[in-house]
Length: 422
Image (cartoon, rainbow, N blue to C red; front, side, top):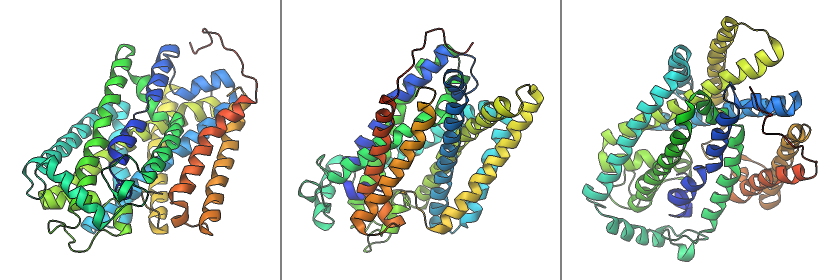
């Protein structure tokens, strides 16, 4: 939603859910369950096929990915809770993981499944309530037609550079297209996201296909409904007396810290709406981080400890390592999140040898392109210039394209259907 006031209707409601509902992840998870039903993590299959070098590289990348996903969630949550309630950012960064680690520590992946279901139900209730209030009973809007009129009027107040006629109600949006490319490149990083595969590993084989396909369809509704309610609502109401900060519009800091949601919630539901948004935010963070913790626990326990430190580890030893990993991961991401908060970061910011070298080369190339493009276009490298659309698109697209290109140069081995984990 941080980009929506800049790019219009073509961004969140359509591009984000369409790309984020990545069908390839669903197919990969299903194939993993079918071909390696006894695997503990998807990286065990990588080690079996490509050996230790490729396994270590992808395991490290996966661990880094989990850390930054969790840190991003805590930084965003800390910013919103701090601005809305005055709660100390450090307290948020540590209290969130502590509460999540407690039930994950004792309940494991079963607790994650149960709590995610509860969290999702709460999110859907709040999301649908907000949507129906906005489009049926809220005086300033009360209908899709009135929303259309307000959005048409908004183009004269805050026209969008790069959109057709500066309009929000258009699919012809340069910045919206760039955002789509950013999501397209970024979503392929999810191929090292262990938690996306961990649920397939834990699920019953008969339920995997149905569960992932249903989840794929249900996920689309969350960004679509939230964007059309809170994102478009912010654009439509920002210059009306119903807006909490009227006549002052949202600042860049407000947008970057995702404050459009609590502002819209206050406008349509009062203080109860703000409390509901904060509850929804906590549910989303808890659900996502709990999955990340379970994935990191499996990664450290099976892909590092049992694979290279103690191959003959007993069940009791593996459980001990898993419990230590839960606490350790929570403390590490909390400490990093505190550092990011005070550094000024916001929410917006394969043969055996090929699989070991290509990720490193593509990382160097994509980061170099990201930094170089920012310096070339804006004359300096800073948080502000690195957050611009063009440098971010350049880095993401190179990261997406460089791996297949490098892979093409190295002869690919042929694997038989029987070469799978027992």
